[in-house]
Length: 211
Length: 211
Image (tube, rainbow over all chains, first blue to last red):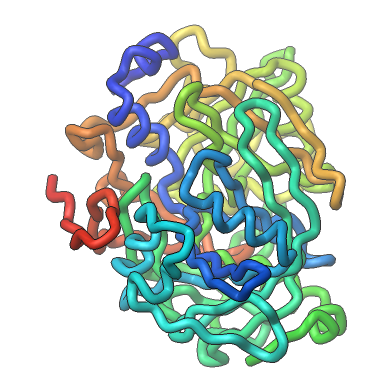
């Protein structure tokens, strides 16, 4: 199938939304936990977290100002702390359900049945059964002029991860911790490792990194 | 395992790089094809493409100015056109190999053995055997002040996709077209569909979207 600009403009809205959102093959779906100043908690699914830097360790999230994620953005701005956790096969349905438009006084943790937990003195809640939990401190927000999307950049201040998934060289294997990937707006996929490949150099064959 | 800010700072560089890059569980790895004004082609692997909007249809890429992707960024700025394509299980090794630091006069298409193809009058090359090819026109670039990373925003002007992978509602199934996901800096994963879930509403059970 071949679509040019004009074809895309003429597509039915839902079809275009699905199509454009599925071009990514696999999305880094995750759950973002926040609390407002009164300690009222919120949990929201995000389909794209991305790496910005390793030193300092920075993660980006994109928030559409008109989306259900707006409570998340409000809380992040209020407290400057939030959590990110992976989504496991055992609770991807609950994770998806957090995208329902609950009223602000409802905690999605409770509504979807994912237990919240606080770690050390970090003020944002985590999903208790996540095997990969990240605590972040807001670094900055930046508006994308092109459509008003807000890029939220956070510095990692804490990581808790199941040690069985962490290799000697720091690599975390998402298959071992049972993380899922997202597809389009509503698809979920399990991951099966093909290989880890060595650092590529011209005219040198790649090797598999065995653990 | 538990890491706090200080622990992260004290990690050995390679360990930290692997760890921080693996927090995403699944990355949207893709190949970006460009040509300079003289028509010399370039192919580079990117581990993160992300959705910015569906109407107009916009895709973002992050480019580190000091990385091997610099030829890509230069070409994108010169011609304002580039291609993005998914990576299939059948050529993820070749895709990884494009990250080697080849001299500027070497085309990675040739060096790694992926045939290039031009479609319609679009000036950037595509990977011939990709079943999902996207042609983009540069919309804007934006520097992230936090670490100099450049966010490249492109508008989709063309999509070619294997029709067998496209559902009635526009959803493209990455499992059907054999797309891989990335893990960390060097891991590759195949995808197996768990489910597509219906639009979530409070107090309403989710249904599976069957195709």
